[in-house]
Length: 378
Image (cartoon, rainbow, N blue to C red; front, side, top):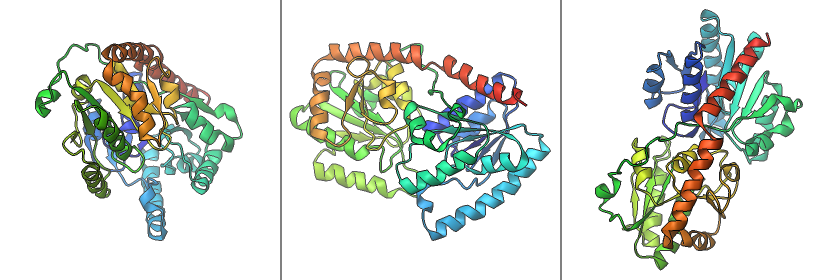
C-alpha cells in the first residue's frame, strides 16, 4: 500500500481507513509512506508494518528541470527498493493512493502484479492531465475515483470504462453530539455569538484567502460574528501563512479571525461552530472534512464545483456558493447567520444524508469487495 503523505488530511485519512478495513477483513497489508508523521503511529496501532521511503511523489514544487531530475532519481531508487519488498513478502497486489504516485503501476506492469489506483485528484492543467492520463491508460487493474467529478476528469483517457469505479469516501461519524466543546472558552467567544469556521490544509486553492474575503463582507454587516481557521501548510510553503496574515491586516479583520493552525481535536472544533464553510477556489474532488461537518449536524456552505455538489443537496442539506464572488457568497450565507432555525434544519438534513449515503460501513463494504474481486480474478 503506497501513500502520498503521513499527516491527518484528506486522502491520508481515507488511506488509514482502507488499511484498517483490509486488516480487519483478513488481508495482510504492508504500508509504505514517503515520510514520517502521525499516520505512522495510527497505522502501526493496527499491527500493520510501515516502511518510510521516498516514493517520488509528484508535487507542484517539482515542476522544473531540477525537480524533474529529483523525481526521476527517486523513482528509480524507490522502484528497486519496492521490488525487493514485493519479492521478499510475496506481494499479490499493489495499491496506490493518489494519481501522484506512479511507481506502483510501473512495478505492477513489470512484475505482473495486480494493481488498484485510488484517485483523489482533479487536474486542470492540460499537459499534466494528458501525461497522467497516459499513465492511467497504461496501468493494469481497477481505478477507484472518489467522486463522479474525478471520474469525469480522467475517464476519457481510459479505453475500458468498466475499469474506473466511483467509491465515495466514508468515515466514522460521531455517535454522541451532546459533548460540550471547549473551543469557545479557549477563544473567549460567547455562546450566543455566531461562529463560522473552515478546516483544511493551507494552500493556494483550498480557499483560505477567499474565506477571509467572505469574512470581511460578513463583518461589515454583522458585528457579532467571529471566524475560525484550522489547518497548517505543507512543509516548504510557510510563506502562505505570511500572505494570509498580511491579507487579514489589509482587510482589517485580524481581531475577528482566529487562526489555530494544525489541531487534532477536530470534533471539539466542529461542535463549537454554527456554520461550516468549505471555500475551495479550484474544484475539490471530494473533501472529507465536509462529511465530518455534516456528521456533526452543521450547515455546510461550500463552493459549487468538484465533488461538492454530489455531497450536499443545495438548499436542503447544505448551501452552494460561487468560488469567486465574496459579495454574493455573503448574501447566500446571510439567512443562516440571522436564523438559527435554518441552521438547525440544514444541520439535521446534513447528518441524515451523510449517515445514509456516506457511511463508513458502505465504504468498507465497497473497498473490501473491489480488493477481493481483483485478487480472485487470478
